[in-house]
Length: 248
Image 1: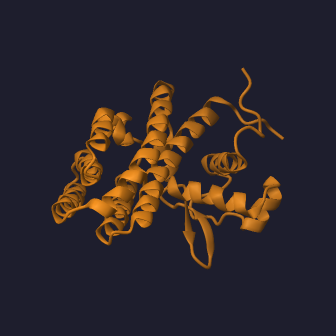
Image 2: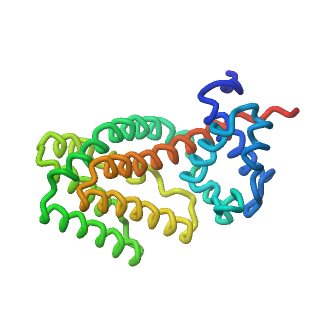
């Protein structure tokens, strides 16, 4: 069976796939600077806007890091190792991607409504969930329960029981890492990743506290979207492992 054609999927996804493959193959080494937006646009024959979107996806997935005013570099921690899914996980990843798509639609609006309706009690519940997440992370404990408690707290702050019902029905699938095997990620990289997740939680909470519905919606969309991009790249890297690259 032939692998996906070079032009399949969106332009940004094609650029992500090519750059991720170069990183995995060692053509782009940890710490090495990536081509500039103009150079990448010329290489892939796409616009600089497409290149910028692809780099944002790679950054969300932990493969690269951007140094403002300098450029974009391959992450020294090589966190892409934690993105590889084996064949047994592919169906799970596809299912979780569908769940995240649903969550973006539902929870982004839930965050906006929560910003308008939250009470001080709701805010304290959310702060408690974030504090628990940070404490569990510092102690080396699993953070899934605290993560879910934060999202459930936002659903409760909408004062609409249907948001709570939908989130509760998802169960463990609401937190993608709970449904997958432990990624092949070093302790330092995992700590960095989870700390970033909780910083995204803090951005959502800050918008809710100040009553900024648009800001809360955008922060939630960014948060869940980052998780989706990470899973998409995990699936893509797995597909690349099964389909040898053609020699020029």
